[in-house]
Image (cartoon, rainbow, N blue to C red; front, side, top):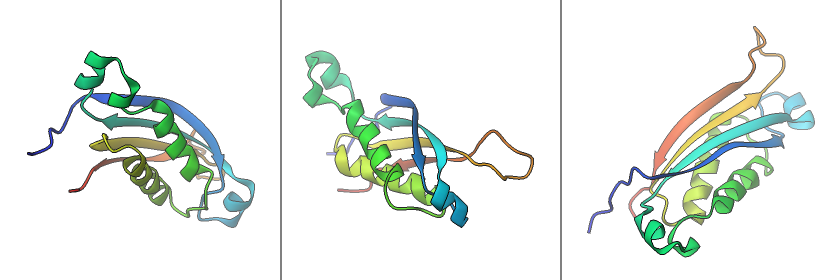
Length: 128
């Protein structure tokens, strides 16, 4: 049986944390503020009918995965940080078939002083 690539999405928007991630030593010592928006794709029909948390993915599971990585060991690149977040969401939430994640880093010292720098990724669960 092939898995349906669901278009239903569970959203966690504006999750913030302070992390010690970056190429430069000062970033890993002082830290920066980060903000994450994530959408996880899953089939929500069963939960929509049952009204049971066990038939969906708990928002807290998604948020906790992001914060665990964000507060965890330092990554030099935001690409690596985002990849680790997506991987942990897949590990902790078996019903998730895809992760779309926007990671913003509020970093000082970037030429032109942008409000933030960031990365957007989309990952699909590999074969089980």
